[in-house]
Image: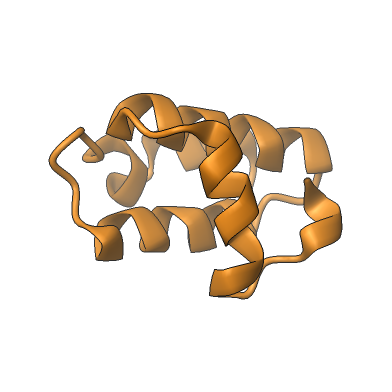
Length: 72
């Protein structure tokens, strides 16, 4: 998956400040499919912006949902 595809994916495009934890987790898991570390970081920033959440918090939670802590 590439970054533009990520941005247009339904799970990401539908995110809002009222998104559930499940929706955010699905978008976070989708971000892990991006090949380049910078794209993964940008994806987390987009998720944070759309959900009005801290990007730092989401990056800290990534290992909890199965992400690689070295991807930060």
